Length: 141
View 1 (tube, rainbow, N blue to C red):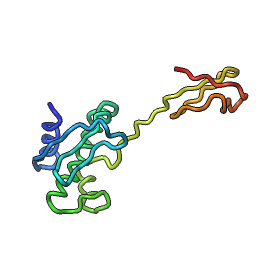
View 2: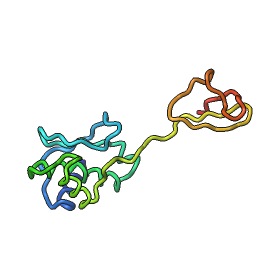
View 3: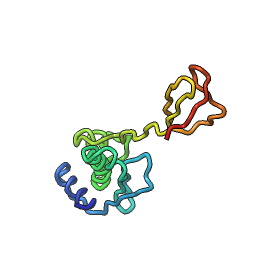
View 4: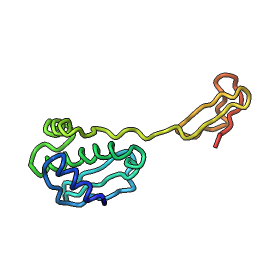
């Protein structure tokens, strides 16, 4: 099933309303699960969210974007701060925020005592030392 068909199915099952525009994957999205464009009505979705968190979480993100979509087309408050949006999102069990996908990607170990440090960013190994014994740190790949 392609993305358009999936969004149409979720719209009918969870909202009882048709989705009449396009849904597309957007590989440039980083911190958001999806976006609604009021000008032309299409929806963008982040494929990485589906891959990392599974179909159940992705469906809740689709519901979130469909809340924007259906409220906008029914001329109600469709923004995050609006009561209509918050009420509908709670009613259909949509996600307010995308779960974090950040994971520690750099692992350093001390040469002397073997303590392991996990960091999200690279560190300057000549500037930083082990916090326990002041030994040199090695990047573990």
